[in-house]
Image 1 (cartoon, rainbow, N blue to C red):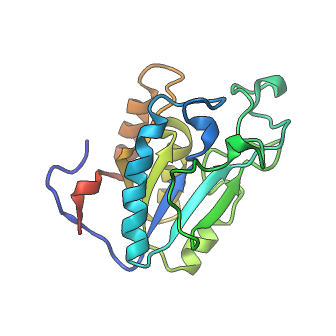
Image 2: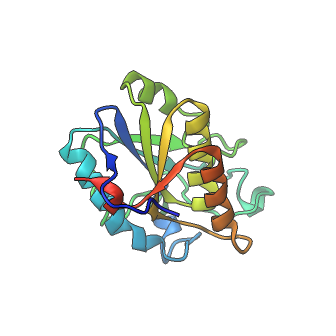
Length: 200
């Protein structure tokens, strides 16, 4: 699924990294834990280190829900309560090595609206365009919801997209949801890469 040769993607001046929803509630012990979600932290840290060393922008997205968000089961949604604003579950894990220059994008802050995509109801697109970003490198959680929808919106907004196949995990509400999401992203024109596909 990833590129077969090592060292075939050169990081350029108009690139940015987007880390999607790598929050405590999606990790082991969290209220909506994703199997293997913690496994991507050291891999994401490699990408963060690379982009930071090159002085390129790093963005994060976070679910930042009100306590009565429409996605919660008690409100008629499909998910357990998760990532309520300013709770431990909404924060990044301590092991995620984000530089001080990281730009944080909060999403799904309106209790009446779901926002799987980092672009949904946020100023992410405006910020990226202002920074003259052309290509996005996107990883995080989860493959089949927030990563998928962020990738789709990125493509629709005219960005070239690489999704980090070694730094995503799926929640898989239905079996193979993650695989179907990967297939959809590829079909839409996103490119799957691993860290070793990048030229140092």
